[in-house]
Length: 610
Image 1: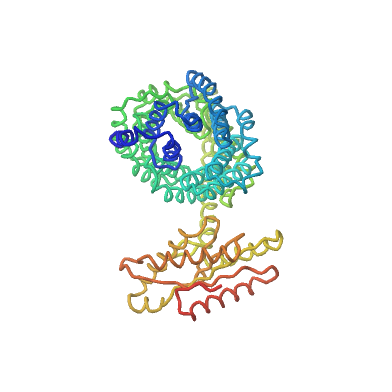
Image 2: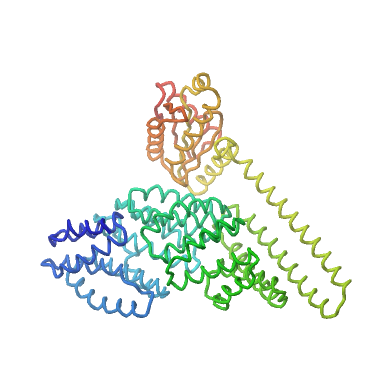
């Protein structure tokens, strides 16, 4: 509140010509939501301005604060448009006309009117003057149009189109020099990877976004951390998810209402229940009971989580009481929440001895998982990890089908009072379940060792075999698609002296530290591998020699400027850089980049030779 007061105090007498500067504070990420609303309120109070352009800027800015989630909000938004459009047309400014159109598209998307949203976006995303545009503001507006288009395509399941739009937005924000929106574009790309079950790629993008957002407002930083926690949760790493949710708990309490804070507490409760940490889950539930929760969606999550907690504590009646508050409302929920709800329904039915309800919920669960499995199988952009997920889903369906058939047969047995028939079914199903569990563990172990075989044991990056295979694959793609790629060979200077002076443990620490520095410096699409003790290779796909030299120089500086290991020692690296020739073999390219590395070391080390 004090910070918002300062915003108003020091800017209450702004000249009309400074309107754009105030609005840019928001669009460039230097204000929280409350501060942005305070700026809008102040700018509105000073209207009308002498300059028609300033009036138009305020109206275009206000559009982004419209609430179209309720009937009253939609009505107010339509009244606003009737007022705003003449003001913006009067200013005769193309950039502001486009900005209002993009905002309208976003509001239509929010209401689920995708075709109407696309009509607003078409004139902007199809513009042919992007390369000649000199205004960073107009570039950012076109980039935002691609962000909205990405969200529409993602909602419709058009993953390739969504990715292309998000990538275009990122590139335009970069060209406009808008680092804040560029970081937010990484979150959009992460959403696509999450939808495609590519959790590792999503985590990679979100970690980049989180790092980039540290210099902007605190709210965006904890929002991306929340998204990162959710991704770890979906991946199955519940401990890491809890750690991340806990890290933003204080910030959420500081900035959000009781509804927003309740969401974090609910997630922490849910994950602790899954880990069987019931006392810790109880502490979060106790804190939840002190809040005033009014949002219907948060209340739904709250009652679902409470029911799960009561059931885990064998308080069946209390679990049913919370469950009844949400029963029958799950049809409009997202698939992952409906899956959770059906699991709870099945467990409650089993606890009550309601076999009919248990069978019905299990059959719905089987259908839901089948749909999810089909969606995974149809996605062509998914990583190799998909095969393992697909096998997991098959095993889960088999388990549920066997369990459902078992319950149906048990019910028939009870009605027919045939004890021996039921016993035979039970033994058969137990054997099938044991076989399914054994098969699942074998598949998981096989996949684990396949992944392990491609990773360097010390650093976690690609090992020699993996990075050389990737290099050959990239070179083949270059020939087929007539593309260019580059290689960077890296060697740690005087590494033997470090081992001799400090020991091999510190030498290993140095290798890990330099590896982390390299990985943080290159792009997510660049591949880093360790080919020997202190030697590394980077494959830069679709990168020319000039770009590769720039990247190599950034890596060299990053390593040289950093203190490494627990002893805070300094270190340098030498780098050889080449652009892969169209007709050379993998061995020839390797020999040439190693020769350049040798020249860098012979030239005095801590240098880049290309």
